[in-house]
Amino acid sequence: MSYAELFCQSNFSFLTGASHAEELVLQAAFYRYHAIAITDECSVAGVVKAHATIEQHKLDIKQIVGSMFWLNEECQIVLLCPCRKAYAEMCRIITNAKRRSE
Image (cartoon, rainbow, N blue to C red; front, side, top):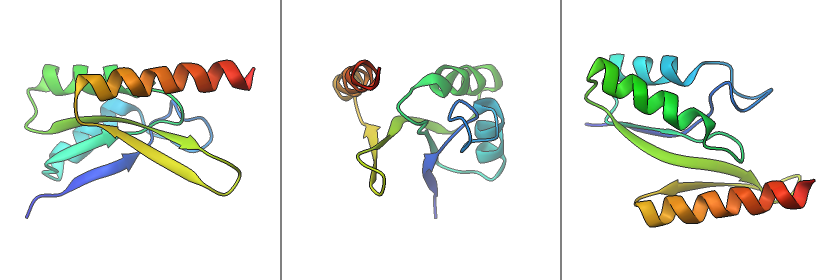
C-alpha cells in the first residue's frame, strides 16, 4: 500500500511548521511515501527546496505542490496542484491574498 502526505507545512509556515522542506522530503522518502505535498500557509516557499532535495538525492518520491489558506478564523482550505495551470492559478490566488492583506 502506498501513502501520500497531502498536508505538510515547512518552517516557511511561521509558528506552525518546524522542519525544513529538505528534512520533510528526506524523512518521507525514508518511510517510502509515494508522494508528499508541501502546503505552506499562503506560500509556495518550501516547494523549491523540496524539489531540489528530490533531484539532488535522486529520491523515488513524487512532489505535490500546494498551499493552505485561511478562509476565516475557523475555516481553512488546502489547494493541491495537479498541473501547471492549477499551479499558475494558485500562485495568482496567493498574490491576490497577500495584496488584500496589506
